Image (cartoon, rainbow, N blue to C red; front, side, top):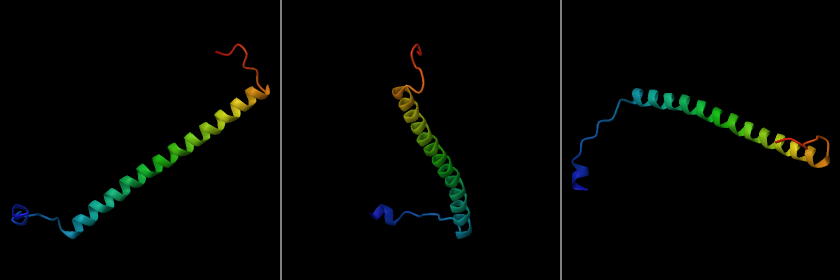
Length: 67
């Protein structure tokens, strides 16, 4: 603790801190949108898979000979 108490920390000005925070908010917003798109695509793929399985099981589509 003594070493930490003697350490000098340099802190950017508040305007710089705000700009960094704003940039991070913009970047993470893009990532959040990409994650939401990916989750939506996964959900749609699961629905399509379930519909395809259902159609194959009920005989609505012929899957004989499909590899």
